[in-house]
Image (cartoon, rainbow, N blue to C red; front, side, top):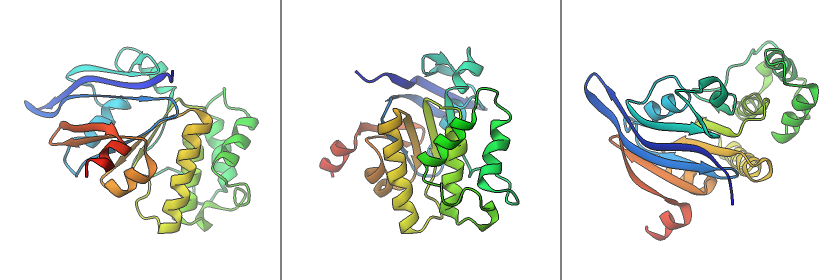
Length: 225
């Protein structure tokens, strides 16, 4: 049986007496890609902020690989890799130099880990070139390598295909699906595009006005249309 990596259990969030998130419950297992779907203002961003510890739930619990995001923040976040609002990188450095700089901040990351993530995202042929020469799709791959370098259990991607051309979207989609299955990573993809979620994800959680409208497999979602 697949191990549960992320759990949101009856999570509420109120800001200035207004309830933004209203009792959300869902989970993601290892090897699973979940699409977190909803329009702007639905509560997606607030939920993501709570998952990564930038905001605390008013009530309910969030566990990452069994660790509470509020009680065991450091341990919980050591299990997370994320790209939110685009990856951060130095354009004047090469892709490899960016990864080495990031690795220098974590004593547990080895040169073998750097080589591993370069291969995982398929950047072997471009990794020594400056980031300033990369397309948006290539920058997303490097951002993905950065997020994976410490071997996280949970990968969080916020609107990961924004701005990519159809070819770039297709390539990125295949990378994510392969990563989940081969590396046993739980992946949370936040999106407002149901077509993208259907092609990339195994399950979907649809949020509207802070309430979870639907939580089902993608195959169920398609059959219900």
